[in-house]
Image (cartoon, rainbow, N blue to C red):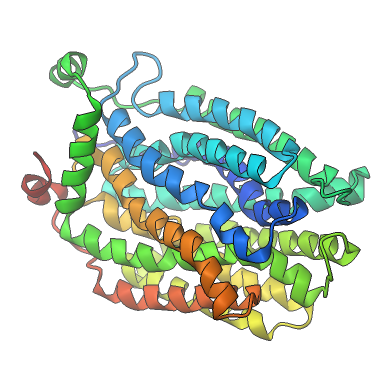
Length: 444
């Protein structure tokens, strides 16, 4: 079927749910390292405590993608049932998470929260591929980047705003999570649910024809079918997907090391906090959240310009330039002494983040068969989560034994990896054969 051209507001409606997903994701990413330290975790243990995020993504996303490819609900369609299930579970966990009394309960809550977010997140990537023609896909993924940037900007400022303008306490008492962070998570729970509900109610999906519908009704799915599909999918990936996979494999550790170590680094090295009970530590955490918000404001604004840069440079070259800018931002962190310069540093990361959230998926979508769009988007996620697993398992040891527990150097290492990703992107092909030419390789 030739896909019709959608209006701006139709694309807005189908992408708006990502605002809520990213609102919850940002609260988690910006605050979990600090939460672990508030609850008494040592610096070299923080990376391992983040293992929940990649492990759940590795397991959940390809399974949800596989199932959503084979789902059709008469009212909710193919992807939207998973949007709703994930939103309900995530909202519940955002209410529970900030009341964790210990490190291990917080880590266990993170496992459940991450699983729930992944149920909603993966089908949203496939949703753009389902609904938009190749000419509009770049705009669709840029719209998702815009909502991601906007949500992250608001969520990043939220703990500080609750403290300064609503008088909600920002101090940790007896290794407890501060009240302003807890209330931020509560607000995030409602933002997540209502945003996803908006997309479920305001966006539709293209129904299958009678032949496909009969096939969906007659299918029987077993766990072995899913395992077999995942294994064959990895082995028989389209060639350009393999090149993009290497770029992702190098890009995302740079981001994860930033999320692991940036916030406590700002508190410890720039605000000179001596412990988590030192008021300078809370001030550093709040300031880091503000700079994350500026990063995401830049992402929000720069996303509007991505279609222009794609038209001028092409998708691949746009991504290369953005990755180099982000790498320079992370690498420059070690030279910052005045906290205000962090706004520039993180603004550069925001440019890279806008591209990371859209260009790889836009480059990938045209090479995939429509009937396996969700599955292959889930498999593509492997090359995000596997490097995070490696970072979670081993970078704590590297930090302790090679970098003298200097968390700032962990952030700098992320910049080096992002620069390597930009170099790997030179091997990605932009104008590749359409999915029909690859289909014989990837069907079974």
